[in-house]
Length: 245
Image (cartoon, helix red, strand yellow):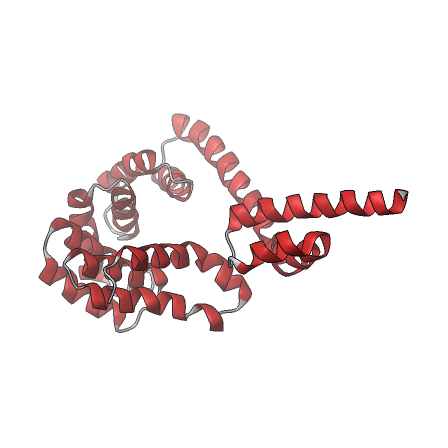
């Protein structure tokens, strides 16, 4: 009886752990049925298939803590030595940590002192987009794309297309999206284009581009599928919002 009781308790622990991971990572919904209906055994299968491969995310968490620690160190350094290199590195760390307002303020200082690189302009534009300040993002991204249309693997031109769409210049946005999508297969660009099409009433085309994101899923390596999950969820949500065809 003690063995049975111990087995039951471990089964419950495995189920709880599996459900917590499911809620955080949101894999395919059928896994929830495996966990609930399969009990401890089903949860163990889920852990082997979904949780253990996520161990790489632990490394990313440590990298995040390292970035924050480095940011704190740089904050102290730039107080006494506001060299451009230090300011730019700190701005990049703020951007990665989604502290967009702080990042943009530092990019302002970097650009005021040095304009030979387009990277600060690009990253300041990304920070402005994240803050939904599209008018401010426009001149920065125009400068980047004018100098290098392929910048950041065509993400720059896709971001510029997004900004023109938000600014109401549908024709320019369409032209830029088409240029980006000739080469780029990034889910971010696909999603932004689908959202743009939905916004101008081209629901059928919007659905097609959103479905292209989901069509990648079956052939993707598992590690890439995990990284793309946010875009899968966004694409699914967009499709649900579109009128039925």
